[in-house]
Image (cartoon, rainbow, N blue to C red; front, top):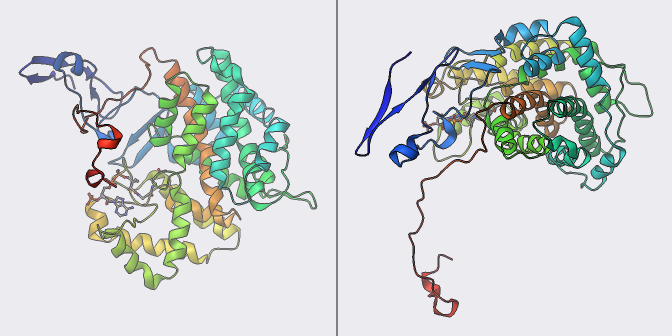
Length: 435
Ligand code: ACO
């Protein structure tokens, strides 16, 4: 597409240069619009705005396509490991055997956290949400690693990437252990990434804990599916926070805070609460009606997506995986899973969901798997954060190394009061005051 675009107004004509994408829609370069035309553009929620150029992940929402660095997500989920995918996202290419060994070794041997970081958790109330503890724990890493503030130093970038990917499971497990009132468990370097995470979450000092291989592989696959999703809200948050040049651990903490919300990563926890609230197939219609009722805030959690107007390709893989994991754990008749399948079928056949192209997203089934693995709902989004951290780091690195990168600073359409006269306190009319 090489058509010439321009914007005509009484101020004259401004040519909008075309930026070609390697796949998917390109974009109009509007950087000079304000300078030339004296107007801003308006796009709340950024539905039509590209905030950057990125070579990491491609999504075609109409056709339900997701690729990391060109590789289809289902192929990666089936054939790769999470750390192999992490290497791909960070470095742009699948690793050779030697490169992978080196990468896995670095991640494995950075998994311990400073002892004093552990004491932070003692300060949290017993029922603190694990996402709150994770946000704080990760933010505190910027105090332990102040040299990471040298964001343009490639060596520091690499050390940061390895440290955060390695330590996040340890911090996540500390948050989990604190919430269940059990002692922290140190990482084990003889275990792979997901087996070690399961070990740190479930082992207790008084007995042996053997990590189940199938469970660890299921988790690894879930992590691959969650590893990146281009400019989603939390990734954009990491980019925006990082654009000021802050310590990257602080930028990752900002991303975790954003992920927590139920419209984003918090949906996996919300799906379980919703299914429990629905409780029984006889109640499904009532909840579908609530979701369609504009005067009701209720939404079908795990349904709908800003980009996918088709089945989320990750949900397809997770749905299949859900069957396998539940079978393996002897929970194939799990009532929540059965309810979820029925709810999905009813919603997919409902004209409201069809017209609005609302399909199950990645989180519709992931909570059911986490629950079957024995995790509490409040830790589900923490698991998501561990996986998505790889994407956040890849995007942060891409941003700081991009010559076009500037501090993110959107503009606004001011709708407040125009200049007015200051009224001294004793002369203000209390009746005119809004409260
Ligand atoms: N249930 C009922 N109606 C819905 C739902 C839903 N889950 N999702 C969207 N809609 C409706 C909206 O009411 C709106 O209707 P309208 O056009 O009549 O006003 C229309 O579909 C478009 O919805 P928007 O909110 O404008 O879409 P947006 O792209 O801003 O939001 C979002 C996407 C946040 C994911 C939304 O679909 C939602 O809230 N889903 C439930 C929460 C969820 O599952 N989030 C996880 C997303 S995946 C992830 O972040 C990992």
